[in-house]
Length: 123
Image (tube, rainbow, N blue to C red; front, side):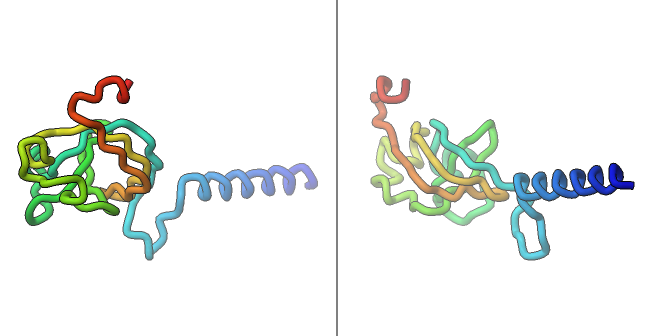
């Protein structure tokens, strides 16, 4: 009987730790999953460059693992004129981003936009 209770306790602790690591999907959560990101990604206007049409107008987006996410935490015009020749509506740029994907949004913690010809800093 003692072996049974030790095994049951171990199983309960394991399930609890998996739930903490994976996150909960309680009734108040608006997101099915979340994932921490620290990558160099493509970034541009979601509508003009990535063909996203969920939002009205030009909104900053990133491409991560062939999926597109709207960015929360910065505005498309915070990084220059979006409609300029090298702006997000007319070109896809590289940026190093840190943050969390929650559902269909990328919640930004850090954003470093690379210059168009800044290949050395990307490598």
